[in-house]
Image 1: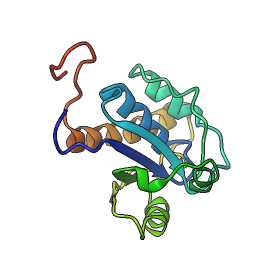
Image 2: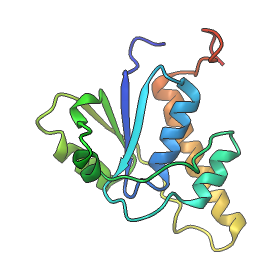
Image 3: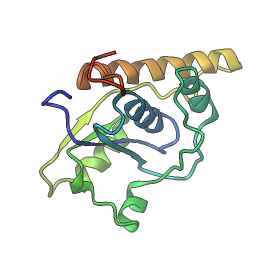
Image 4: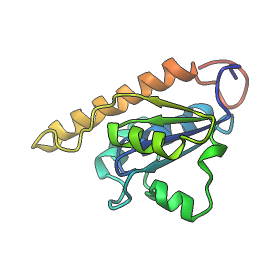
Length: 158
């Protein structure tokens, strides 16, 4: 594992139903247990998005068991934001909330401007194309930021 990779990452977006679960799922698939990864949203008023499940399934990444949660629920359940080395915000609202919640902690908050695909397209194929674009943006940022994944059975990069 690269020396500049954090040991723990929290991804966040608006509802923890589309972008942040995609990022969490990809990180876990790419890096296994090398990096502790969770996700949260500013709100938790939705279920995991079916299109997100579908486009990640195309990569062999399962999101169907994901349960949405908000920053407030994390606090209620005893999850301490200061235990994360890095918070990656995937929406402007989640960036504002993460900065507000971490202003007393010494940890990094990065903002990745990722397309929100939820309102794009009217037909199924158009919606899937938008969600794939979002998925691929997230994958590109992950690989650029954290480096190539390693195969789980050895120490070679994939």
